[in-house]
Amino acid sequence: MEENREFENNELENNDLEKKFNTRVIVHIILIALVVAFFAYIGIRLYRWNKGKVDDTDVSVINHEFDVEVMDYILPMDPKLLEGREDDGVTRIVFLGNNPLDKARWDDSSICRLVQKELTDSGEHAEVYNCSVGESLVASINETYANNVPIDAFGFYWVSAAIATSDYSNMDDAYSHMGYENTGMVETIDTLKNLDFETVDVIAIMYDGNDFRCDRPLDDGEDINIQYYTGAMEAGLQTIQAAYPHIRIMVLSPTYEYGVDETGQYINADLKKNYFGSLSTYVQKESDTCYENSVSYIDNYYGTVNEINAKEYLEDNQQLNEEGRKLVAKRFVECLNKYKNK
Image (cartoon, rainbow, N blue to C red; front, top):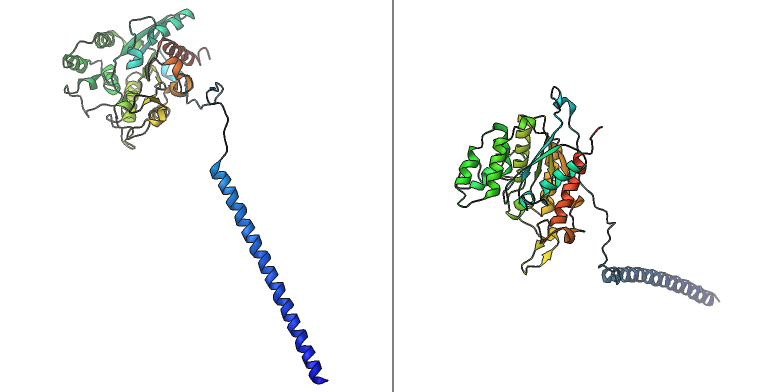
């Protein structure tokens, strides 16, 4: 009997062990199945995410309501800087810059003449002077003026220095070393010589993307270096401000322009880069420089002729057509008058 009982007890113990083992196996199988299912789910999700889905959006339709952040920074003239000065009733505006202003300079469709017309049509007595030089740069090529690079004399800093000192001898010397005749350049030199900047109300500055296209260095980071785009801009602005604090300075950014690839096809501006960045990088740095020097900034790159409407307002990949020049002139006058009578 005792042997039978011992046998039965052993059998019960074995059955209990077998049940526990089977239970553990089942639990492990369930856990493994859950883990496999989890990773399978993650794998499917990743596959679908990588694969993406068909986008049937019609990209040929331009959304004219597309939002861009315009970097306008328009300041009124500080009344303290005008104390003791009499208003003679004439708004005198001098434009400095390069190609956009030089384009069609003797035609009624030039930016300067369009600005003159906008102001005159509104009943304002205005005089607008075009002192631009085509193909000139903001950044100087040489550290100091030398006639082996005569175009430097017509860059922004050296023009600003000439205005501040009323000394245009570098321009005369540079023109004699240009090696060709340029009636626009001659007109600019003569106009500057005959202007009394004590009577000037506004200096407007507009350079296109020529510094970007010519790979001029962008930013020295610390020092004001006129061989750099931002350094020359800052030095020129400060030179004018020191000499003629009563003059309101307004900088107009370059407009949008297409890049051109190796096959001659137009491409998005941000796909065309030099060592220092894209044209939009130069625009941003110019904006920052104006902000830091309390100078009004009109953002043409995003706010006037931009990626959305460039085909309508450019005659090639970079030059403004007549409608583009009208748009720039109109927006300049709007910004000029923003704080009028306030």
